[in-house]
Image 1 (cartoon, rainbow, N blue to C red):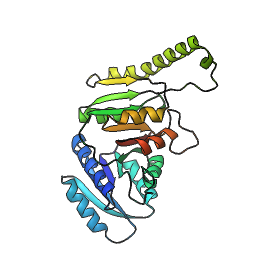
Image 2: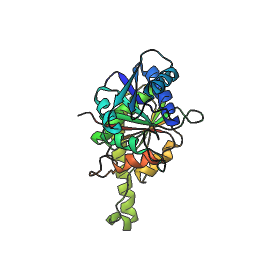
Image 3: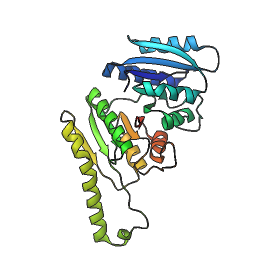
Image 4: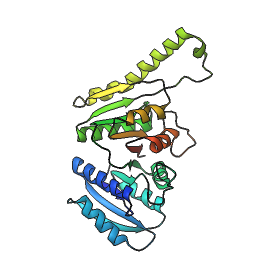
Amino acid sequence: MGGQIVVAVDGSAPATAAVEWAAADAARRGLDLRIVHVRRADGSARVLEAAAALAGQAGVTTEALTGNVVDTLVAESPAADSLVLGARGLGGFTGMSAGSVSVAVAGHAAGPVVVVRTPPQGRHDRVVVGFDGSEHARAAMEYAVEQARARRARLHVVSAWQIPVSSPYAAAYGSLIEVMQDADRQAHGHVVPWRRANPDLVITEEQPCEHPVSALVRAAGTADLVVVGSRGLGGFASAVLGSVGHGVLNHAACTVAVVRPRF
């Protein structure tokens, strides 16, 4: 990853929350902060100056960029540690919890895209990550581990699974118990190497028989950050941003990080 967090601003309240989150994350992890404004009108200098003052720390650079908002921000991602955006603003539709720009950037950027909610009341000292052992989920786990360590927080791993409606197990209670136990064992096995590799972290886990979106949204109620892969956990392979990532972005109560592997 690069050594710079990039945060996009447009003068809106969601962008203000994004700057505050990004500045705190940069301070925790010893990274520089780059604040960008994609110009569609005059006023970039004022917006950038206000954002830099809000960040209030050394290692902050600002730049006014031109072009399509989504394409321009995605182009920033390969060299960045992460991209940070407000949950709305930057042209997002007010009818969605996560703006259209945030969803589009999360679906195309390289590396983590953090979509920041309005700062919550209080802290939970808990990072939640959705994990199913896939390549996209492993990238999410790596970012979640780094975030939990920097925050000195607990890491809670959610490995949700579902029984297909057509499954023959649905008609046999004994077989259903067996398949549930097998799913639990597999999910636990995915987590064991991460626990061994990170003995300094408190890592908890759950394997609910539940749709991944509902399981992660529920866990988000007592989390400071939820981390998901851009696909996996049941996401549709045809979607640029998987169904789980899209669902969590739109319904989680806390800040969400969507992590795409860097190929």
